Length: 431
Image (cartoon, rainbow, N blue to C red; front, top):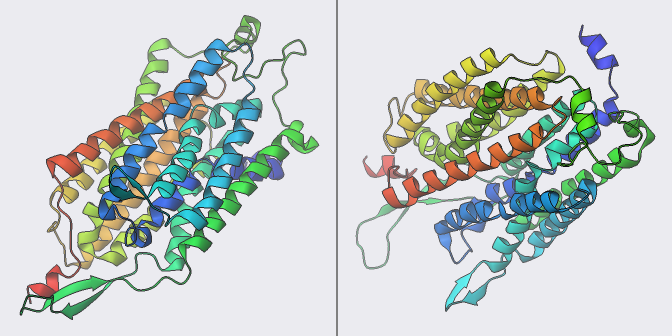
């Protein structure tokens, strides 16, 4: 069975689709994993992540402009827009390696203008990819959509893994110091120097984005990739992603889905992305750090690889049924509730100084991220045969869900103060 499924595809096209998907969010994720190093020199300090979260949401301007473009344009030249976005993301990441520490005065205060401006460019690539990159894969056979989704999942894992090699987030040393004007010694966390600088890291991310650009170029030029494209009627010049595709194309496929299931799956996608892209990343540190930095970084790394691994199941199994996706979404809600409970109990969650607590929090996060990745893959593949705008609407649901989740959690974290931060030296202060 496995040999038959793998023989029915071109592995080179799989690799090109994977590298194309890798370029979607790797620029944004790369900036996030460098925060522990960048914030020490940034004038915004630890308020910098709050600025970045809202900046990513402003980048939803990209999907809005693209939607207006395809609505009022006779032809949607998607591949040229993708070329432009990937090239801009590549240049922005390379520029970040030299300019991420550059600041300027705005309204009388220093701000990380270069960092935030260039990150906005990479965020435009990520946000627009949901309504442009993924729908573009409808030009190719259905089996290659899973490869794209695996690559998109790896865009979160690879920066995290490289950051761990770099030394970002290792256990800080608690040093006993006496602050000026105080006679009482205090334990203060001190981070160790990384193995290589943020400049080298951003050059690496820019290189991967360049490879993503070249992979997309190959998808459109190599004969082996062109042979795997969906064969369209010869009289039809519009891409399948064109919202003005001729009715004959829409009616000849025989694809059917009940209207209530169609909208139900879109709501499910929005809910899963609200949790996976908006809520969970914002509270991950609150739920994991109280159990120690080892537990936290195991969670970040293993959970990041759980999603693409779960998506890769699409290589070996048939498209999941709607009933199965509904059951798995129910499990996701239960696990999210548990994670939110741990985050709300920070800085003193249950089983805090026990190996059982560390093991439990890591396993829960791995299972949770794996389930989210599988459900997103399942919903996307269900819409893949849609000759209309199914994949486009899944991208819209993804961005709306992520936007609502990010804004809601931002308010809860920064203004309502539902979650309390954890100090790694607090335990020593009590002894």
